[in-house]
Amino acid sequence: MKIIIAETDDAIQQAFQVRTTVFVEEQHVPAEEELDEHDKSAIHFVGFEGDQPIAASRLRFVESYGKLERICVLHEFRGKSYGKEIILAMEEVIKENGYTKAKLNAQTHAETFYQKLGYETVSGEFMDAGIPHVTMIKQQL
Image (cartoon, rainbow, N blue to C red; front, side, top):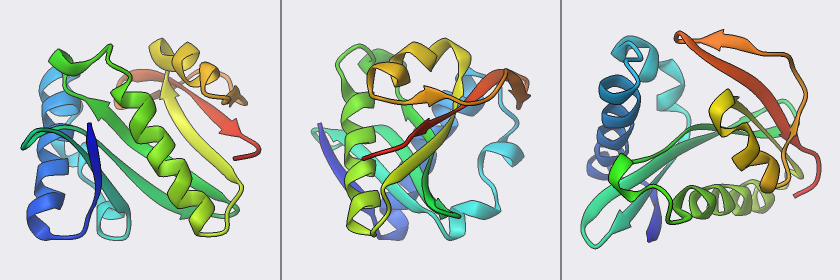
């Protein structure tokens, strides 16, 4: 998978397309919750297989953390380590910006996936867009 930072309107729209497919269509998150005010200031990532956008995420810097958000891979491309690849790319950008910690809100079904990447659960379960989540932190990148 080739991963880019979306710097053009077209690339950002490709990220939004993947996110809409996964979160709005597949997981039934309301569109107005999925695409929000943080999209304007976030760094967007898009993963491609050939010319097809198949993965997306966004990164924001909040307090002393890089905050990983909206991490998703199209259903038919899961199980190929693409989620891990996009997270590693995000962590590199966090380090390049002088941060050493990462934080994310994980859907509970993905908690083990993030634990394998070094994230520790630091909250109890909570609901976000009708989906159970936990907050996870990686203390040292």
